[in-house]
Length: 201
Image 1 (spheres, one colour):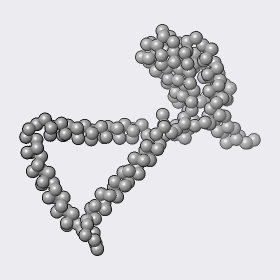
Image 2: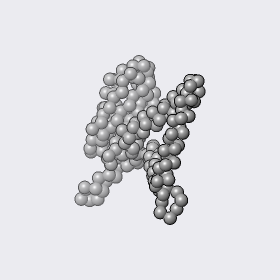
Image 3: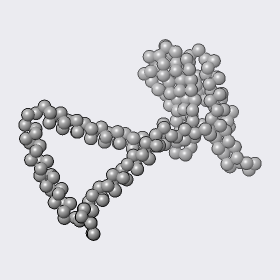
Image 4: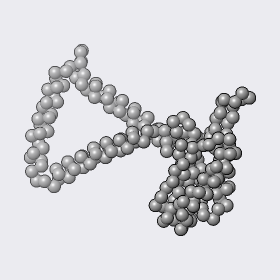
């Protein structure tokens, strides 16, 4: 979970993967097929000739080089900036504030995520069904959301584990005075690994 669009993440991964796959396949064919070099040489010469012709036909005013080179450099710079921005956004999205209510007449109400973390960790830590738990908060579409991760003991039913967590979440909602969207992730024993449950609103 982070602040980057999931579809954009997957699209970028697929695009980069396809490019690398195509380059690798071309290199492998060139190394393994005896006639690949003879086939590629005239094609590369034709491409070089055509590109040279384009560069000569598009000179930048007052210079000896083509404006196409400037356009290519500009596109590369924009691409680098976008990739840097995309990279720097990875891993973000966490928030330390669970509730920030400004509608109160007496002032604003701010609830730190540590309140939910301490309450849930203490309640779930007393249960034998769980080996460990972790609670964090993320900002999803500018709204805070809890993520509860629990590692179950082997043989624990995901349904039973979910019911236990749901009971504690309802108690937390009553404590906070409002229902907080929650993503619940279960892992651990085989029966828990084959199913994940969500409580997302």
